[in-house]
Length: 347
Image (tube, rainbow, N blue to C red; front, top):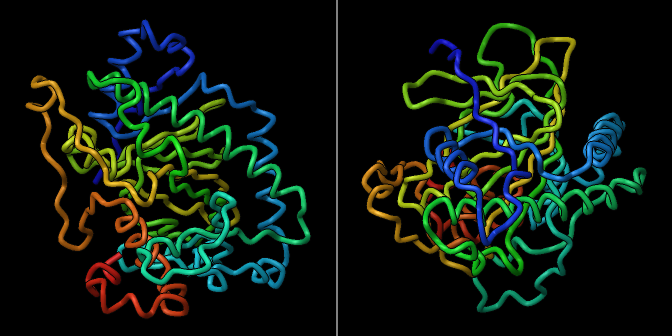
């Protein structure tokens, strides 16, 4: 399809200062962006440009390490799906993504005794950190904490925009929600072919937040099938709706399909993508939307190759097993008989 001449809307979070008297223009703009696009730029977030720059510098230093140093913290060594993946190891829609990445979650203790516990508890555990970059851990954990606060505020605003109480999502995000940060490097590729940095997909979480460098490549699919470019803009993040919010709003908020096109040969792209899920032991509530909103919902997207589960842990584990078959095979082969093969392999 041809590229659209439209652009994503921009939401200024600084306009929402008082929960008791929320700005109606802000709430309407936020609701429309989440409903019509599922993607938007976010400014006024309060995270310093210095911290963002420090994170990207640390990420660049990590990806510049010799491969043998990066492979020392390879994800295949972690049953919790944490660590480094070289380009081509992660799968989207059955094809390899041409990006290397470091996956980092919250620092939580491993669940030692899993007997009688749900399989998704295997996702909890420690991260792997590169010994040669001791500064990376402190920078990442600080950035994660601040981004988590921003997205929790944004969830409150989204709830208000739907006519709900501001704390509508607190039961699933107020304590220990599942979260994941991907530091991502897209090496350049020669022209021709699809140049799949990451293939077309939806995110399985509540909200995703992306910090981009100055190299474009992120694209969002519109309802008419056209692809809309989402180039970087100064002092903004990209935020997009995940499948859990689609479930919670009965499809009023859509988890939009998106992809990244690899840079051309001789260039590269760096990004940090933070994914806010919900608590693994929770079930996603379905909000009672006002009739005016419910009547304009197209319903939840049904994909037989990618079923949506309202139970958070089940949905999250499904996504990790599909995306990382090498980790699944090494650490979780006993689950393959319990999860339909179509779910595991049609990523």
